[in-house]
Image (cartoon, rainbow, N blue to C red; front, top):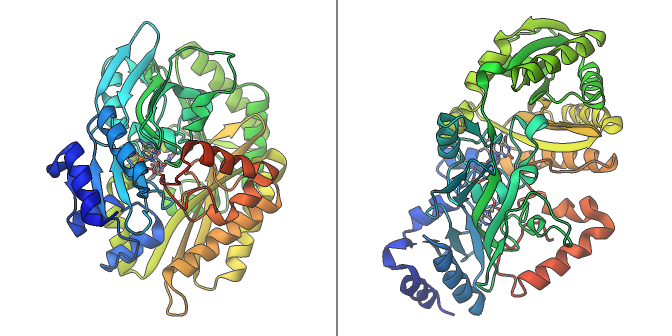
Length: 474
Ligand SMILES: Cc1cc2nc3c(=O)[nH]c(=O)nc-3n(C[C@H](O)[C@H](O)[C@H](O)COP(=O)(O)OP(=O)(O)OC[C@H]3O[C@@H](n4cnc5c(N)ncnc54)[C@H](O)[C@@H]3O)c2cc1C
């Protein structure tokens, strides 16, 4: 079908004013927050495939009609909501239509009896949290992108928040949803506390990254919000491995502080202004109320970390982390311009592994990056989401841009090291940002013999392959 015909067809469904065709405005719709692209943008270069247009749907019915039309005409489609992807998740293929759900918004129902809230896919998480907090509730979901992300994208990426060790990731919070399939069919997964009626179909959408359907409505759990009843404390500890061992013991003994963070010496320097002694790692803990549980959790954590040689630094470092923890979400453009002016590129990449492997992965990645990249300024990381059987490492890296390689080549060099060292030790190459496009090449190794199931799902749910080509499937 001709491009003009596609645009006319979309305009007939949603109205001309909600089909964006202006080249610069369409490019805005495809902008995510990935490091090498931020660097390139600061120089005015935006070298990514151009979408044909963006269509801003306002309702499930509109999304259904739009997808039915695009599917019938085999038009490549890229779903998006908040646009805070850090993995090229909203990068279109050339000529694709951006399906923008950010206007399917609003809080549809706060159910205080059954402790759940239902919203549109374009509901900004920050606005939802603000309203719930004022009523004495929280979603328990607090990613660093709280000021940017919206409910559809949060489900589609299997996101996780900074309070996860108590509340879990979005997979633990999602109750039910509504979605539009590639052919326009509307489906609903009802809200129940649990059921045993076959495979859990929510998992088709949790982490689908827009490849299997378009989420239009989301119901998540809510919890009592008791910030005044929290316990918190920071500690310095001898090394990353000492900190990992202490966190393992906390989890194994059954304590569930909401925040469990371990920052390596590199991050202590770069992010915390040397609050801990040189060469030591920093631990931040926060246990959420009710007070009796928070205090008991705090006492348990305190005893365990001290057994591992930690020394208390009081509550101040936790308080200032709470205060500033999401600032980067509002300062992305400014920060990338500064980095560009200094000729440097910065970004992050997160992985997970079991307790027996995670410390080795951390060491191997840092050692290899330092040995292989002359232009590396710093690599470090932290653990911020822990489980009884393992944890994540969130690597942060900064390198000097040189004339020898493109920014993307150097960027992918660091990523390749992280992917290879993680896979070599049986870890997972993405703990919470999703696979996006830059990790796709490693997906066969990530999934091993179960990978063909991904293709079977795709063939069954999106047989024309219109949804988010290049993500998850090589
Ligand atoms: C500064 C910063 C900090 C971050 N911190 C965290 C963090 O702490 N935890 C975390 O998990 N993530 C974090 N992220 C990553 C990002 O915020 C999450 O991936 C978030 O879930 C994306 O939501 P979004 O609404 O912005 O989605 P988008 O960026 O619009 O889309 C993300 C992906 O989901 C798909 N998608 C979007 N909407 C839909 C829909 N309605 N139906 C189907 N597919 C859809 C898109 O195609 C894309 O693949 C951070 C990002 C930034 C920039």
